[in-house]
Image (cartoon, rainbow, N blue to C red):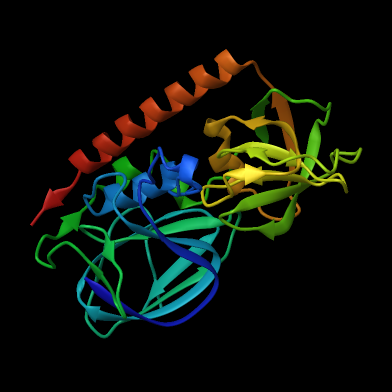
Length: 283
C-alpha cells in the first residue's frame, strides 16, 4: 500500500508506539494522543498495536492511492471517502491504485488514525511495510461492539491527581496540538517566575493568566509554569478527543487509584487489540 498526499490541512503526524527513557536528554516519548483508537486502527489491518500510523487532528487529507492495498481508519471526529464512497469504519477497506482518498474532520472528536498493513514508512509518498496481497477482512458485527472508533462520544469526566486548585469544570480551548491542550476556566492565575522543572505526559501546568496546559505526547520535558496536578493517563484519550468548546468535569483521585485505573485501561486495550486481530481472515 502506498499513498501520495495531494493536500493536507490541520494537524497530522506519523506516530508509533512511542519510546520511553529519553526525557533526561530532552526527548519526549511521542506516541499517539489516543492509544486505544490507534490500536483499533492497527487491528483492522492486522498490525501490532504500536505499528506506525498517520495521526490526523481535525484534519482534511486528500491523497491518491499510488499502490493498491488495505486501509484502516479509527478514531473520532473524521469521515473518509474513497472515490466518493464513504468508508465503513468497522472494517478494513481495499483501495485500488489510482483511487482518491479523502479524510475530513466531521463529527464529535478530534483525532483519527489511518493505518495500513505493516505500518507506514516515510518518503515522498507514504508506503506501508506490508504486501498488497496480504489482504485482511473483518467481521463487521463483531467489530461494532467497541464503537469508540465509529463515533461514540468520549467521556466528559476526566480524572487527575495532585490537584493544587479546586477547579471542577473546564472548557477545551481551540489551542491544541501534539504538544499539549489548553483548558479554560481554572479561575485564579498561576504563579509566575518559577525555575524550570521536569514535566511529563499529562502534567497540568497553570499559566499566569489562569489557563491550564496539559502536556501532550510531543510536549516539552521541562516547564516553567506552576504545576497544578497530573492527568490520569487513562483519561488522556477522552481529554484529547474533546472538541474545542467542550466542557469537561475534573474528578480528583489519589495516585494509587489513578495507577490502578491506568493499569486496567492498558490491560483492556491489549485484550481488545488481540481479540480484534484474531477476527482477521488473511487471504
